[in-house]
Amino acid sequence: MSKKIIALFLAAVLAFSCVIIVTAAGTPTIKVLTATAAPGETVTLDVQIQNNPGINTFALGFKYDTSRLSLKDVRVESALGGQYSYGTRVVWLNDANSTYNGKILTLTFDVLDSAKEGDASVSVTYSAGDISDYDENDVNFSLVSGKVMVKKATSERGTISVSSASADIGTEFYIDVFMNKNPGIATFSFGFEYDKSVLSLEEVEVNQELGGQFAYGKKAVWTGNADTLYTGKVLTLKFKVLESATEGDTTVKVVYSTGDISNYDEEDVDFDITPGVVTVKKEASLERISVKTKPSKINYFVNERLDTTGLSLYAVYSNGTTETVTAGYSCSPTVLTSAGTQKITVSYYGKTTSFNVNVSDITSETPAITVENVTAHAGDEI
Image 1 (spheres, helix red, strand yellow):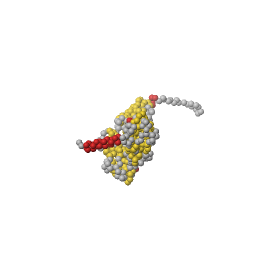
Image 2 (image 1 turned 180 degrees about the vertical axis):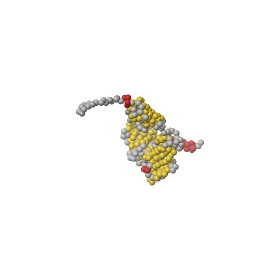
Image 3 (image 1 turned 90 degrees about the horizontal axis):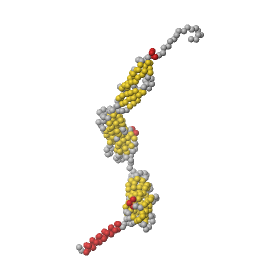
Image 4 (image 1 turned 30 degrees about the vertical axis):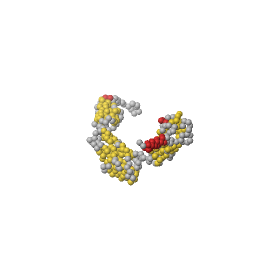
């Protein structure tokens, strides 16, 4: 190998070594990183130290865009060691020089609700004597600012929900469709998803308060002449429970595809969908009745009419529900023609129960009154 080649090789190695040395011994720097957030959100920014020559204390302040941000909290990275406090500035102190490089602080900001879209700058500040080593020599750092990129506030996602209902087999019922947190729409096209072996969709009506034009074929289609922020009931659906349906719960859901809901500028608007639950049940049948309270009057004379004042029944239905019945029943007999204990039969929707009354014979139990013949003159007392 020629001396010239060796010399060139050594020069290259030396140059590379110098580059490494310069990089390792670069300018001490404190750098604030960057993050993105929307108005109303909370965001954290890391502060890093680079090329640290050795320090044992710092006192740092913060400068930031107060029209967009509010500083909520400052935390010192535990890996840095030492002790710290935070008031108007964050103060850190160690018992020896530290050459730690990496994250030293975490800044927590609230992005103001009124924050405008754009960059909100965040920087660290310090004065002479605020950063020093164990021998109390000032250590100077280059400062690199960071920022919170405030993005456009996103509209809260709207919801379309279906109300729930309960219906007997073979009957018709209505459920409503509601729109909430509407960010502004000019048209929608809704389909409906439900179990066609249980339900039949009979009719769809639009709420007149929504305005615009409406048609219903395979889908419910509505169009306005401008964006509307209307929230509330938008549709009413009329269903029938099929005779072949079985008891249980089934769902009704609004469905739509991309492009089915949009604003006046033809931009798609997305909504979260909440289905409704329809509880299908058999019509409850009356299983049995019993006397809950007897009539107020239970003692009678022969040929008196029955008085049912105060009579109430206890009714039990097939679905487990119960009811106190105070009207709508019939009693037999209604005229008490025989003396003794009389059974009264009570009938209510094909079910019967009974109670007893006491009937007395008026001839045997009524005291006899005898009037004697008396002769008297005018003015006599008799």
